[in-house]
Image 1 (cartoon, rainbow, N blue to C red):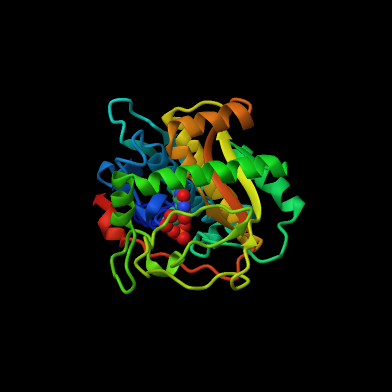
Image 2: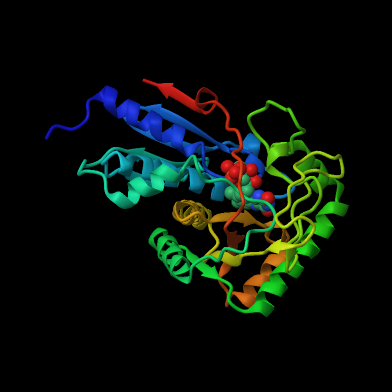
Length: 333
Ligand SMILES: Cc1cc2nc3c(=O)[nH]c(=O)nc-3n(C[C@H](O)[C@H](O)[C@H](O)COP(=O)(O)O)c2cc1C
């Protein structure tokens, strides 16, 4: 069987970049760009979109880009390609995070197609979940999905450990709310109702008033008391279910591990989505060095915490816009 023509290759790589754009990213910064040239797709970190206060090291930027890379990979697998990925291929070009070329074509597997089908259906949830449980078997499968990408996904079983994570989240949220630089950065990426910019967190995706869960998991305050955001709250005034708290960790904490985390995160989220399960994120504590170290040493046996999430069945979640592909893809054909 002959391989794809140059035009077909270009079309597949362009479509894969389009799929990448639907990845989650911190504050929907979409901190990536793509270059398509000579049958190769390059994924770059867009340093202009770095959160200079909340993400000084670029850790969350690279996790976001890792999630985008997973979408590229799975989009090509779903087309029956076995892409060749090179991660951080050139030490002299640190912003070039990965290159992707088409490899053998051997027919799409069902697993990749299932994950691919979720890419545009997956949305971040904010607030409590319904009473519907997350099956234990699904949690086991999610652990395997993360492991396949090289990261550890751990549902937190102990109620006291869950309370500690909730308390650290509250501590970080309180401190960040009092910090003008943090607040201004959040303000820059939260959007008022009716805003048509295709980046940042839109008003239909965050609650007007902080949602309550049991135990309480404080959310980032995108509304900032301005009356923006949605009013809905699972169960009316009663606290919603916190769901299953889970962390993604890595043994080391290099740029490569942050990309790995993003790949594992997106694989977990897509698989969960296929089973009607969504994630809410609470990464405030990981933005504060001492709290992150505390988690690592006291709860995670020395593993580096990269993501904190709650998983559950939402009533509904709404999509968030993305920049048009032309804004993020440079073609040099
Ligand atoms: C590294 C990372 C950290 C995030 N942290 C939070 C968080 O603390 N709170 C939150 O509500 N959402 C968080 N998110 C979710 C993003 O805000 C969300 O992905 C983005 O707004 C795009 O929306 P979508 O996921 O619905 O497509 C995080 C996402 C990533 C990738």
